[in-house]
Image 1 (cartoon, one colour):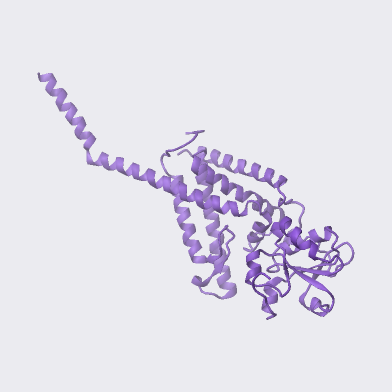
Image 2: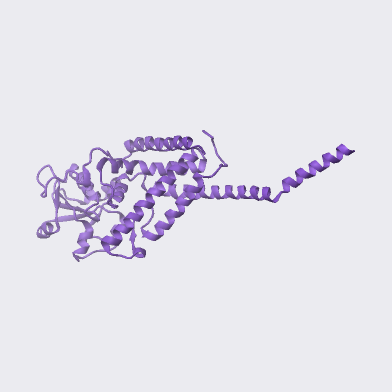
Length: 183
Length: 164
């Protein structure tokens, strides 16, 4: 009888532990994180696949758009970037959807977003200095695969994408993975 | 998250992309050879006048004086740029869709007439590329208006809008 009581108290203790608010909160937080991660994956994949599709078969056009930045005008390198970059964007997008090599893809996306942000900010200040326009009036085609917009909108957009890719990169775990090549 | 794994995966993603990119580039009609072209998009433009065996670069002043001759303008930019504004009488020839426009525009061109190709600004490539392509097809009087449409607008010259 005494033993049984002990058993019951133990079970109820376990139950209480399961209902422990802190644990419950942790469980909810992790579920929420997974929704956030899934959201980031889908948004980034959509943006990058769309951007890649617009320039994947137009390396010359893309090279021209890169040249417009007046940063890189080195013949073979410029064209190699114009050929390869859209494919990296496309494969990263596919990787985010399928989950294959997702950690590498998120690192690549983070690096690319940082790079894009840098050159767009550079170009914005360049335009401000050379054409003498106010920050909020700078307007150009960034060559990202979308229509020309105001630079400040593009910078905000890029910051958002950078945030999402950082979130993905530092996410502890991923769900909905088609094939796990590495842990 | 192990940094080593992240790096290995990154190399894998970039490596696979590069391999596919170059394979595709090799087979695509729009593919380019990154090692053959000279810097600044100045391809095969080795003189200021179209002497035999080369394509001429032309400046605004020059073709103003030869306007009494029969000359045709080709707009190498995209259709949306063309609709926004182009040189009056210019024919749209989007270089990035060469196949599509070649069928439409080439029959309209007289190989004897002077063809002046332009794109948006001095740094754009498409006019030079288009000129080289036309030259190879036997249109020997091809000139590139290197200063581009931005210069035309800046000079306050007439601009036509919309598709003809």
